[in-house]
Structure formats: structure tokens, C-alpha cells
Image (cartoon, rainbow, N blue to C red):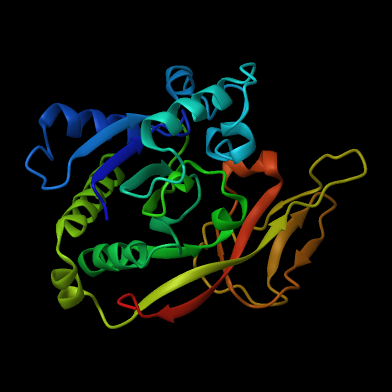
Length: 290
């Protein structure tokens, strides 16, 4: 049972919508009348000050049991992960709904990434989609396997991604859309189980991550290709075998050779250090009320 809602911003310090939005919501007392208490967290304080994704290590990869149970203080994000675990956790505590706010340089529009541990997550995302039809939903089991993101602290969690947005930049339309998503999520969390079941759609379209596609590199480890112009900005559009994916530095083109699907996070700036050019998903229809 959800007893508290926490809205998180600044998990990545160069993504500005989250920190500025939680400051606005907090100053305006936006959810003071909520039947479930709402609080706020600026996650990566030092990276936010420096307008950097992270200081020493990605905070959103730092919530593993090994790090949370460790005592090495040499990495700022590991220390901060342990502090956040004390604030929001412990990790086995599941009475908190976490809404983690992010932005992306990819053309993802408004996207909600949810975990499969609790049916509530899909239901909440479906409710948002009813009110904002352009919202996409990604059903991800990746964190179930790795259990390393901030949202792994609770089974009840939604990651909000909006883009395209350059790092270190605010946009009014995306700021407003993110605020609308939050209000719908908080409204849904306050509903009774019977209320939720009455208003949920019969089916919901979701995207499930199936694979990662990596950048080609030469023997020296340098990039030997870039995302092809015909793929750029085509997030959630079908990619079929034979379609161009990379423009190679030698002038040739690399075609896609995998199964047909829907690419996401295409040419995301933050994923260069993970060597990820994009992720592939399959589109399916699920029943949110089950």
C-alpha cells in the first residue's frame, strides 16, 4: 500500500526540468491537500550545481546492493546513493511511490518508463496516457535484473523522460507537460482501487526493450560511424532489416540486420559513454487492469 509519494529531480545533474519543477511545486504548496503525503528530493546535489550528469559515477547506476552495503566514500554518487537509500528506503520498503524526472536529447516526446513488479505502475501510466494520448509507455524489466537505478528502491515507481532537450536547457512546453504528468500520477495514486478499475482503459499499448545496438569502433576504440540521418529523430518509428542505421566514416552505410522493431533513445548524448547508439523495442498490447 502506498503511504508516501516522492518526486525526484536531478538524478542526472545536467537535466534541469526535474530540479526546477520540484522547486516550483514545493514553493507553491502544490500537493499540500493530497491524501497521500508528497515530498521532494534533489538527488544529485553536487552534479546539479556543476550542471554535469554526474561527478564521479552515474547516480542512476549506483543503487546496487553492493554499493548500498559498501563503505567506500571515495565516489560521491556512491555516498549519495547510500544517503538516498536511508531517506527513501530501505530498499526492501515498498510503501513509497517514486516519480523520477528526467530529460533526454533523443526525440522521445513524453515517455513513461515503468517496472513490472507492481500492476499499479502500468495502471498509473495508462491513466496518464488517457489524459495525454501522445505519451508513450516503456515496460522495462532491465532494472529488475540489474536493480541499480534510484527507482529500484521501491516496486512502485515511474521514470518520466521528455525530449528532445539539450543538456543544461529548460523548455517551457516540456516543463509544462512534465508537470501535467506528475499531477495525473498523483491523482491516480490517491484513487481507491475501485475508482481505478472503473476508469482504466481495456488495453494499453506498450514498448518492451529487446536489445541494445552499439556504435561501431575501430581498432583504436574510436567511433567509426554515426547514426544515419534517416534514423535520426525516428524514435518509436518502425525499423526494418535493410534500413540504414549507421553512416560510416569511410562513406559506406551499415544497414540494420536485426529483427524489425521500434528504436528508442536514438543518439542519446549520455549513452555515448556506454557506447549505445539506440535501444530496440517491440510494441505490444497489454491489459492494465490485470
